Image (cartoon, rainbow, N blue to C red; front, side, top):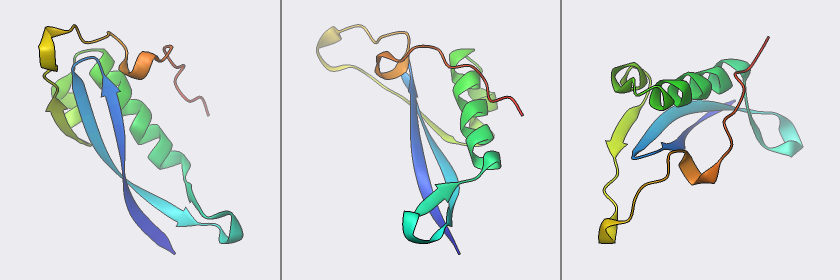
Length: 87
């Protein structure tokens, strides 16, 4: 059985809502398949490269406006850059 969910990705001043499908794996709960993980990786790479149109192909993208005039960090949530998934 599959469940629909939304994963959020924040990169700089953009936030993407990425629809994903989670597969039921029994007692352990829901799990995300390789295709869904690859989709998240594609959206993240597109946002990091400034390719908003590319990210819009698979996600809903929002531009964040900070309150109080603070600068938005370059990476989302203070993360280190991630290596792409290799298969």
